[in-house]
Length: 133
Image (cartoon, rainbow, N blue to C red; front, side):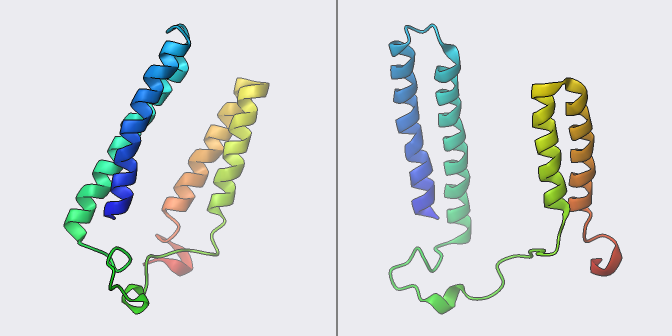
C-alpha cells in the first residue's frame, strides 16, 4: 500500500501549485476552481495519509514485495451480495434526485425519500429474511 499512499500524497504537491497558477491565471476573480483544486489537494492528502498508516499497520502485501507469489493473496477478500437489488433502488433515487434539481424541488424530495429507503434496505439486507446472520 505504500505505492498507493505515495501516489496520493504526491497529488498534494501537484494540486496546490496548479490551484495557485489557476488563481493567478484568472486574476483571482473565479474562486470555484481555485478552491476546488485546494480541496482536491486536501482530499488527496487525507487518502494518502490513511493509506500510509494502514500500510504501516498491516505490513507489506504480496503485491508490494518483489518475491510475492500469486497464491499468497488467495482466499476470501470480502463479502459481496450479487443478488442485491438495493443498489439499483439507490441509483434510481439518485437519478430522480438529480432530475429534481433540474425540474423542481418537489421531485428532489421524492428522490431523497427513495434514497433513504434504498440505503436503509441495503444496510439492513442481512439482518432479516433468508440471509440473516
